[in-house]
Length: 173
Image 1 (cartoon, helix red, strand yellow):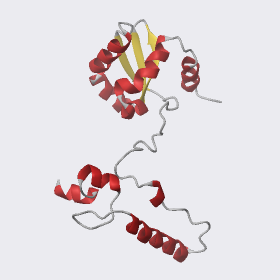
Image 2: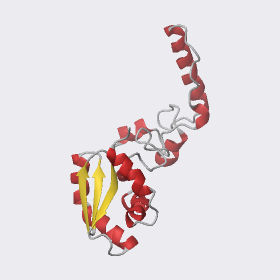
Image 3: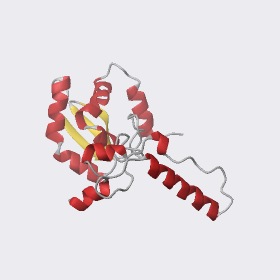
Image 4: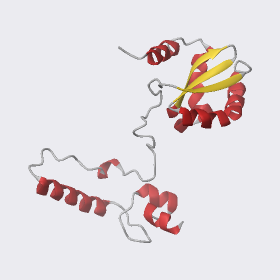
């Protein structure tokens, strides 16, 4: 059994020639990926676009951005959408290629895949787990470039973006 909003979302998405389907396809480009994770258009009725939001805070925040969103939609689709309304309600599954648990797949602090730890098959005790963890940190430290300020191993993305590690950057701010 599935919730009614999820069923409606799936049914509306299966209707390729509807204006709502066009809006849903454009939604990420109109509002950006962060907002698109928290808000989904679910109904177009007499020129009013209804958007489900994750909670009332998102509904209020987006209502303040209603005019720029409406302008972008009119630029893309013409005068089909005359008004945008936001309501807090259960969201359908995310159409984005990443999940809310992993919202920043290209963040500079992410480690390259070769330095992500391999899980320990079956640690027999806490000492083995600790040794595995300590060994991983030493190995990772040898494979990452050092921060020029504090000499701590740093993800390459941080060095490219800020010229130092995130801790040194925060200390400097």
